[in-house]
Image (cartoon, rainbow, N blue to C red):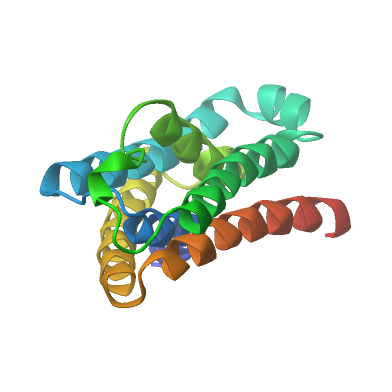
Length: 190
């Protein structure tokens, strides 16, 4: 019973970055279709669960090798995407067509966001091995929780965007930059 509770707590903790980034993606002016929601939530869930499993498989080898700079990678990816969102939000007028902006649910942007939100799951996978928890079940739960919270974030961001327009995209970009800074500060001072 304690193991399951521990897994769910870890899963929710890891999925909070997915939720927040999904909130930002949902607030972007790109058209949100069921397909784009599936792509984002599937990728976030897959990367979270997969990185946890990879962390467990690799043990201390790669985690120790990248521990000194993984937070900088996450910050750079989130900062770049957040800066792009801020720039688009400030340059776009509220009456511009929504389909002219880049779709964050495709291509390199989606991959970069998936990696940035799942880097912490690599370390969590190592912890799962140390806690002697069934890593397959844990990885599936982590992926599922990330998928569900990503869907909730996308839908919530979409509603906020419809209500507040381009200001939500700028705020979303700022939040991504702040998440990147939080990741670095957490690694440097904790």
